[in-house]
Image 1 (cartoon, rainbow, N blue to C red):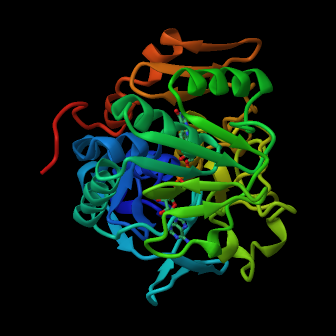
Image 2 (cartoon, helix red, strand yellow):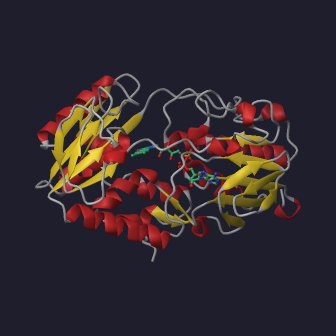
Length: 362
Ligand SMILES: Cc1cc2nc3c(=O)[nH]c(=O)nc-3n(C[C@H](O)[C@H](O)[C@H](O)COP(=O)(O)OP(=O)(O)OC[C@H]3O[C@@H](n4cnc5c(N)ncnc54)[C@H](O)[C@@H]3O)c2cc1C
């Protein structure tokens, strides 16, 4: 297939899934990538970047570095018609095929440079504090608490979580093992309590929980789940394709149910499995394959199908340990840590995008 006769493919969302589609199809189609940021960020490396800002040199990748042959629109998609994507800055981008990969909404800096600066200032905040409060015991709060506990063992870390156990997206055994690890590091965990976010005043170092407990901390980090990136679809031609949780319903070929030319991948789909980046990448590969086939005029019946995977997730606990939820067993300590916690899959993800694993960008 020659690109000059190629179809117009629009990818909305340059995250874990969208970046793979853009990279893989750039020589096969007239491809446009829409993302509010100029760069792709490896999401699970962001907590390490807070304790070691230079880590972000490898985990923040300008879209242009892996996507050299297409059009980048640095804006948010705000609407879709049967033929076009509309962006919040007024672009109308026509498509023959559309791939929606908007994961989670996370209003972060537009430029890579500003994102790097953000990590420097977060790092300064941690370094200059004797005590840190982390609000939220999902994967983000747990991984951040782990990073701080390991890199700054003298700081008092308190983690407050509204649920009855940590990392609720995986099993209770993982939560128990995580709690024990925190105990061994002196991290204080308070479950079934909330810190009212709107009661936090600037510069205030005293926090009150819903149980009336007072926590003293020099700084705090809010690590609560980010909203799904599908709200913008609610007034569009896809409004009836969202389930009660705002997830897009897809068929086994990852096309939006009942649509011939619109695909959805990653965390936004209603596929019944744990939402993980490595699965978002697998879905992206399926869509790349299916789009190649369709663009070449191949038989639709030969499209690849995607089957939900069983539970598999690793939550890092600092630089060496982790807790892993595997299909039939939960393990913690150095063995899962060896898999994830050293490089946090940064080299692997960069290689997946055709980049050197280790070369820092300037
Ligand atoms: C702390 C933490 C640790 C994790 N660890 C792992 C791990 O070890 N392994 C693993 O496999 N997974 C891990 N995950 C999960 C993984 O990060 C997600 O499953 C993955 O990022 C989903 O990819 P995605 O492409 O669907 O969405 P995202 O990666 O969230 O990308 C969405 C993209 O869409 C863009 N976007 C949003 N709205 C719009 C819009 N309206 N218009 C245009 N663009 C838009 C965003 O800017 C972003 O670039 C972890 C998650 C967290 C929070």
